[in-house]
Length: 301
Image (cartoon, rainbow, N blue to C red; front, side, top):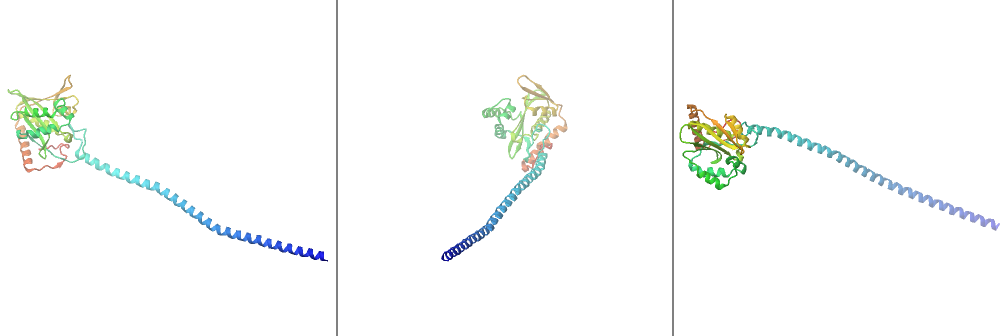
């Protein structure tokens, strides 16, 4: 009996310990479930934040090409708006016919006064020739010359026989032409030369100066006027063609344009007198409008 009682006690103790172990394991599982349930919202929140960041990044990436497209459209609109203004400016200054057909200068230029240059302005004439570039000096004198040579050239001018005209802007000579009589008996012949500074090229000044020189030579009873230049001086060909000149080429890369002049008339005399009078009036009044009339065929007084 004692043995059975001991066995029953042992069984009861084992059952109690088993129940205790089961309760502990159940408590551990419950605690683990609570911990997992607590972590789940945190993970979901982190997942939501990551998804939000990715969505924002996608939106930003999508906005960038749109911004680039908008910028490209704005630049294209600006270019399209700038093109007509450039065309308008080019139309104002023009690619005028004559010796300035190949150039277009979209800028306003003070219209020069074309008039006679007198002995008191010899120093201004010298400074004008010294401002010519090396290329322009070659076209004017046939070779590169120094300032000392230009000084001696101006000193040799016979101001009472040679005729010097110039395009004057703000008191400075920017272009010039000289007509030198050849011989002393009638009918006379003459030699002409024209020079235009680089900033004033492309406005027909060379053509206008040549026209004035031919009119002056005609009124001085010159039957023929010669102009020497280099073969590469294409402007000279256009001027000669414009005023009926004949061009002869020589072996030393020199070209001679020959202009045959008729006798003077009352119209040519009046034209020269009126031009000089208008130039004098503009010089005294000091009115120099800023226009591009030379390129458009409306020449200065």
